Image (cartoon, rainbow, N blue to C red; front, side, top):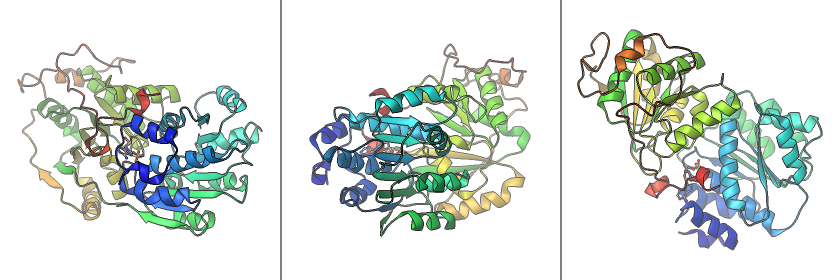
Amino acid sequence: MNFNEFQLHDHLIQAIHRCGYTAPTPIQQQAIPFILDGRDFLGLAQTGTGKTAAFILPTVQRLMAAPGKQVRALVIAPTRELAEQINEFTQTIVRHTGLRSLAIYGGVSKSGQIAEIRRGIDIVIACPGRLLDLHRDGAVDLTHVEVLILDEADHMFDKGFLPDIRRIVRQLPIKRQNLVFSATMPHEIKHLAENILNDPTTVQINPSRSVQSIAHRLFSVDQSQKISLLMYLLSEESMATTLIFTRTKHKAKQLAQKLVHAGFMATSLQGNLSQNKRQQALDGFKNGTYTILVATDIAARGIDVTGISHVINFDVPDTAEAYIHRTGRTGRAGCTGDALTFATGEDNRLVHIIKRSLGKSMSCQDMPKLPDLYSPAHHPKASINTAAAFQSIPKGTEKSSRDSRKQPRRAAQLNIFGLPTAARSKKK
Ligand code: AMP
């Protein structure tokens, strides 16, 4: 099957080529015809399946077909990063169509967003809080919305956004098309979907099982050995682009600082950072300035960075679902990936639950022989000064260390199914 079969507008076909897509993914094959027909749609699909294009392409086609008053399409997303990512893709698609899109989220000044809305915006991609805020200020009119899209609905529920979403929905015209995407279907989302959707078509694309291309490895480790093990693995295994998850914001920041101090090109992404810093960290990880990103679960979902070779759970996630989301950041785009988990004795119950829900085995790794303090002297292959990581870290040293001698290189940028990357963010 190819995209021509959907009879999309020429501008959209050209945009799809610009993205480097040759054939629709399964969710696109199944969703696009129904959405083009104007049907309500429930897609059970994770990020990485191509769902953004599945809802943006037919929505843009609909808006191009007939003029209307702004704002005409509203996408609600749970995180600022995801809203930004969807907007980047949308801007690639709407180029030359005369339509305009905008991401709206908190943590940055309202005035820029208000000025953009005044210039005229057809497609708003918003996080719930700031959208309601602007609506209360009278800065955004939602009475002309023709299409409502809820992306990552289950994550919105986790974040406690459902009351906000209900408030937003009350501001919309009753007659509209509704599309809901969710990786899983907890009771509350089922209820919300039933309220919002009108006779929907439902499509399920492997909603909760881990991607087959990921190898899952488990290290049983004492809390005190985790950093030594991490340094050892980063030095001894060839890790191109690595996403490390910690349980707390503070730990993410501290660990990134330790890695920088040890000579790695690392940074952190966590909720204590300003929105600008968060975006800088993510952009730096995407463009290869940093080869290691230490993050909390704000990076577990939705974030699409091509070529992540390794995900390391420095701390075991709280739920099996979070494990699937975290590890789903690797093994994308037709590449293989490695998911490494450091588990202490206290994590046994969680590990058991994760193993059961994974649908494939997790290989238990022998603990490498680590010296008390892992250092290049003990491991001649390592060229970085890992011993330094254990010294106290001066404030403000968390930044790229381009000067370190031998760094893991960034993986080749491939897109889903092994195509050269669409480089959404670069083709703006
Ligand atoms: P998403 O699930 O929307 O976050 O998309 C995951 C990744 O798949 C992104 O890097 C997209 O650019 C890419 N992608 C989406 N659709 C296609 C397609 N039809 N062919 C190749 N890559 C795609």
